[in-house]
Length: 446
Image (tube, rainbow, N blue to C red; front, side, top):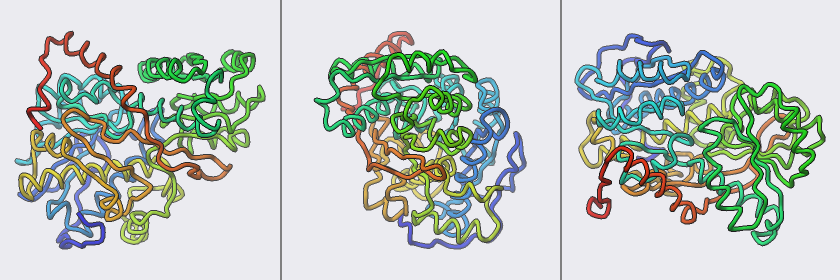
């Protein structure tokens, strides 16, 4: 789908929900794709959700109004507020999974790790693919065992590998990792513990000291953790927080004298909201991302011209345009659009259902040419998925906070996915055994 091509204009205004559960939609026609959205605009993580959904909805609105939808099929969304909570997410999913006016659900976007875990078995029974970008079950990379679960773009295993690869670059090569001390200060949850396995494997491979320090929620007091870090005197700290944990960690690191430019935040410790509250002590902090901050991408010029400047943006605070979380929404909308486009190439330009959506995801192939056409070169990495590979990317970029903005300081850094795959296969096999499931034969399906 060409970024520069223009489709037919919409005859009427785009019907988008007002942002609460059960919001009304305009009547959908036969060429409208229903897409339910499990949003979170309230609760402790609302600041990230507000920006993510603004980027997502602005991009959908742009495609609907300026391109006539995806291959002529308009996307109509309906939001259901989850507060990022698993029980609310399940309620929303059950309410919306049936589709609307004949248009079925092509895929679901939980936008929450707890919700994605809660939906793992439900999406299988309902045959609705689930897309989790930069979160979710790493073992779902194995599509033979998890045919309806897609941790697209960057799993936490790939994140850990990418961080070690970046540190190796800074240290002058992998040989120089031997004897280095790398502390991981992690959110003490299933999300935070996800990198324990891959980091242990990589430490054996390269000879660095893998030191793991848990950080209990909510993380408003971290003096003990950082006092221990001060005593260890590590070369690098890999910071895997969420919410208030990250700015508290950065401020506490400054108090104990640990250099900010040797702290690397993970993908959920990489937004403006993670560093601005930390003040001057955050200057120099590094973080990984799959959707760098900035507005110098062609897609942003289009969004500004056709959405923001016309007062049609879902973004209330225009200063958040081009922030990390806004760009996260843009990237996730682009991926959703390309999944629909891929399915259209197979099944025709019409609304698609879950089985057809699964085909679209497993055959997604966004190469450099398409990135340029979409106007997202540098904002989105190339993605190529398959039956056996539900991640499809595995690369990250590193950005640095200069006190005012995030600036990319690396190109795309690819994870060592071949080294990590045995860990993934082992976890996937254990899940299949637990559920008494027989993995599908991806070689035959291909």
